[in-house]
Length: 438
Image (cartoon, rainbow, N blue to C red; front, side, top):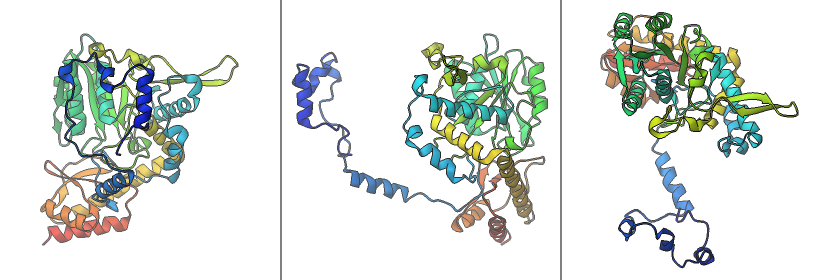
């Protein structure tokens, strides 16, 4: 806009006069003269509201929205019931700030409490925090909460999402701790290599379930190996897959984390999304961020409060136990509404359909000469195939309004969710076949 300051020049002069000043620079008289900006910044002039609207609309028009999406790799195109968009848009939630004063933040606190409860039900864990920025951040925060004075090394599977690996690496760099990547074998974590890396300075082991290649890891065996070496076990799980697979708690995990975008957040260019974190009672005081608890007031009425810890105890500069502990409250509310609207049955149906359609797509693609599965093993709704003329096939799909799989090392990573129809899958398979059999 032309100006973000709502007052008029005359009003500003009146305010200056009221405090005994005549010029703005007098407000900064303690700032050294050498730090003053003597000339305006070389930036474009401000625009009117109408001009801004036109400019933003022109940028938005460059976006390509695909009616059919067969790509995942961390952000997934699931069906979102209309109520999920409606409730978080209510101004009571949309404009609410962080709930420091419990007595006037009961609605926000209850929404977070409900979110925590459902995350615990989904993961099998005892305690959940109020969310963190995203799934990769949650993994890095989990690695940090597992460290102690003697154990400072984090092990992470090479089969985890590359962005998650890099985020954990960045956090480790910031605290001068070590990250070691466990090699993958046949698309999954190499259990024997993991056992060799489990030295007495390892604090935790992180795996993704299902992993970046879409495969189910042998989580229980990995957890047993970690615990036998005295390390904690962290699982990063797709929340939709949790509706039908073994919970992290059942696999022996100490901490469960993940990207909650599939729980009602639409695909968008970078978010905002949210990371969920949950743990057992044993480690709940190490869990970073906000935790909302339920209690009663002095009249015996149900009430909600921030429990166990203050956020401020984490953010003590170089002594910080958490780098980022703000929660994504509006996104967490969205996830809560999604889980409540879908219910256990609806989420299980979404997971089952996603898995079934992915297997149908894989079978269809692999019926084309030259295309085969890169890895054996059970998978959820993503899989990697080796295929000739991949770039041409993906371009042909794009021309037909279909976003195909993601090119990865050694193949193409495909994904299917409950949103794609059999007709969509058949059309995609036919296009790939036409290109690959020329």
